[in-house]
Length: 323
Length: 168
Image 1 (cartoon, helix red, strand yellow):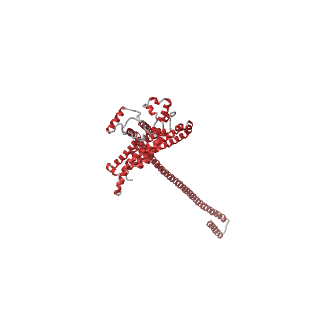
Image 2 (tube, rainbow over the protein chains, first blue to last red):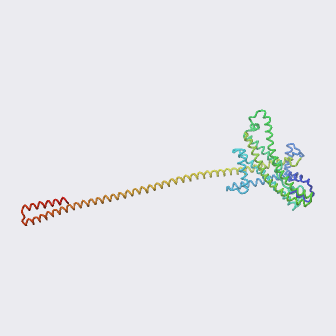
Image 3 (tube, rainbow over the protein chains, first blue to last red):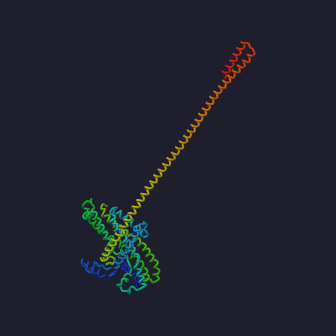
């Protein structure tokens, strides 16, 4: 953990929140800089008329979170494709341990979510999206809980002095600790955007472009009510992906910040009351962190499920307008 | 600006690209094959269940049929045994009757033969008696008896013979 860097240096209690935020936030510098990515960023931003100083400058450099996204997607694709291809090609019908977990989720989502909300006929075309959202978010959440890069940081602390490599070195930046990609609002907003596009596409596919937008106004209301209902429905359309974004990011972020704060109790106690107090508070703070990690595991699965479920529900709402 | 809510359009674009790639790959190599596979497996299971059900009913039908056949065979066997018993009894009775009839015939035959023999014997005896009485009479006559006496005697002797004949 990158808090480990601070052991033995000055630490004051009011540093804790900033530390937690620094840990959860994306890296300020990109950890990989590629010339072609930089020129591409500049071109795209110029196209949209965004200056390089703007907050909305499209910087396609590989920041820490983008690097972790690649890592997560690599793990998701390799794990799931290997397991499923192995399972199908064997034809033995006996899934192994990991495969039976995946199969459990797949069958549960298919029978209780997809078929219920989207429909027995239409579900096949939307199932891959819902499954991908579920497993992508699940792997992102769970991999964020495993302190892989924090461990490399700790090893770096003991084995070599990462700081000596220079502030721009990849190893140094990675040793600053990993993070849950799904706690970054930009990442969750991207997935929510895909959900948004999906449920609009589902409606248009079923009813045609014009009829789909007409469906926003439920028929059979007295006409003055349309002035209220249509704006509400229209706003709801955009609030749905925003709610998805903030729910997932907030849940994942909150857990991590709480986890870091619990651990900083040790350093704060040491700084304020002396080393003995630090040792005294350590069992308390570590058991709190342990319990919270267990809770976070649960939250990781629940949030992945909620995201997938709501995607299915929104697609279903677009297809079955009557309710 | 809070670093936790900063818009990072680069990260957003990367997320879109990466997620779409993952979706495309998993859709092609994982979800669609898996869903097809699961569907096929469920169909197989449903079919085998149906087959088991029909096999069960078939088995029950066969059992019923075999029981029916067995019962019929039993009945037939019983009928055959009863029939043969009856026939045996019949033939036994017939044989017995035949035997009885034959023995009766023999008996009657024997009786009639005996009667004939008896009659012949009596006749022979009578002839013998006549002869003897004639001889006796001649002998008596030779001792000079009166005519009257002679004829009286002959008459009574003949009558005695007649009475004897009637008696026998």
